[in-house]
Picture 1: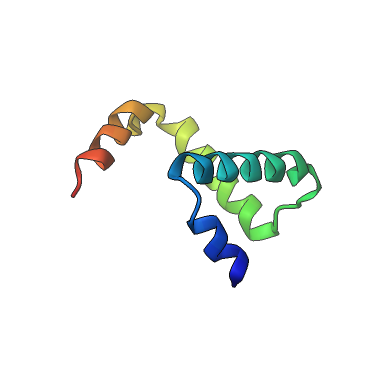
Picture 2: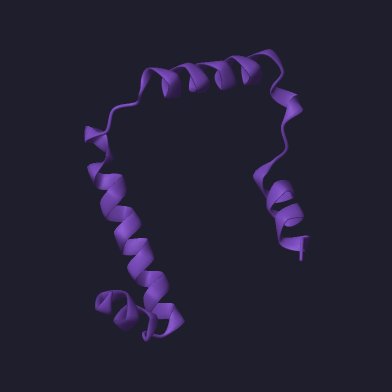
Length: 71
């Protein structure tokens, strides 16, 4: 696709900004998206797991640090 090739030629900072802008536009339009029954059930299950044991998880900063250490 020619458009992808053109985008790849942009500086990294510009490509990151485009991705952020695109993501923001998706977030704005996401109000019209509906969850499937399976997605809703999974979210409910995860919320129940969290409610029954909120200390079982890890703070985002800790998890992020673990991910960033991996090669």
